[in-house]
Image 1 (cartoon, rainbow, N blue to C red):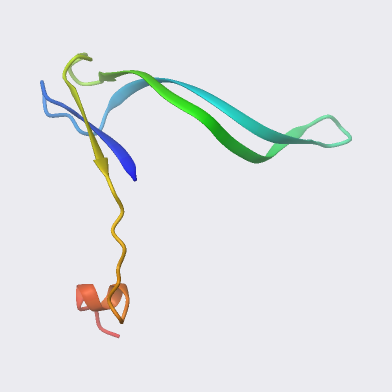
Image 2 (tube, one colour):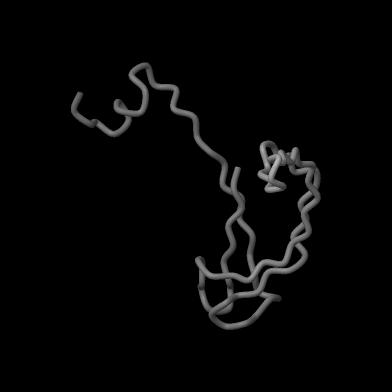
Amino acid sequence: MSVRYRCAACGNRTRFDVVSSRRTRAFWHFTLGGEHSVDEEEVLADEVESVTCRWCGKSGSIEVTVETATVDRSPQGPRAATNAPV
């Protein structure tokens, strides 16, 4: 499932300023030299606070759409659906 935005004022579907708060739990791995890398990260909470259209600057006209992924259940897999040569 993915979230997409659309500005009803100007029709923009690609450029938005999104302000969000994210709470995570991460496993930090430190080297003996003191450098660190994140080996695992789990998102505990993610809240979008505001969305503003980058083209026209409006925030009150943003529409949210949720797209769900489709599962291919054909016997031959994805190639059968597109008629691609085998």
